[in-house]
Length: 205
Image 1: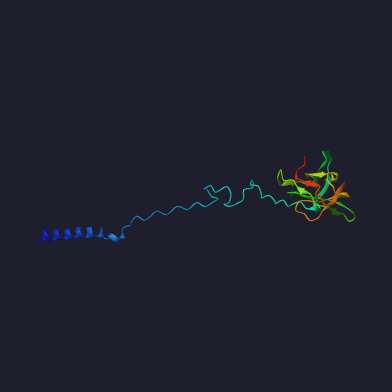
Image 2: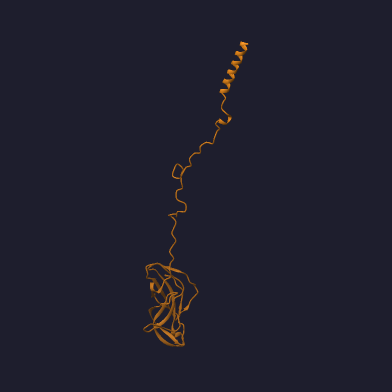
């Protein structure tokens, strides 16, 4: 009986020791969690950023050109070029020079009439247009010139009453203010005859 009691006590001691080594519950075990995320790189750090801000203008891109306005009588001077005769006609260029400080454009046909008196007044019909070559836009830098060829037909070719003209009254294309340029010739007044023909403005030769 004594041996049996000792054995029972020894078994109880072993069972107690085993129970004390496994007292943690399954829920207390450490579960693997997600790793801590790394920091995001910001512009200006170790990551390269764009060379320029989006939408910034390209310094090499040309700026839009300023529009060039039409030449007006106030920024033009008009002179009569060298006159040449041929078979009852006189040819001469009307030279338009940009006397302003900025470029301007000139296009079309001048208005031209024989004239006389003070103030200068027209005599007879104005010049007919010679449309054989058409018209083109000419850009005049300050000091640059363009020209239109005028033809005068001798009044003696027609049976008409004549009046002495002392000037040409010239309207630059699309202008309502004229410039008087000295020019001596006969005009047909009765019946009135158109003795002048004018071409379109071209770059000066």
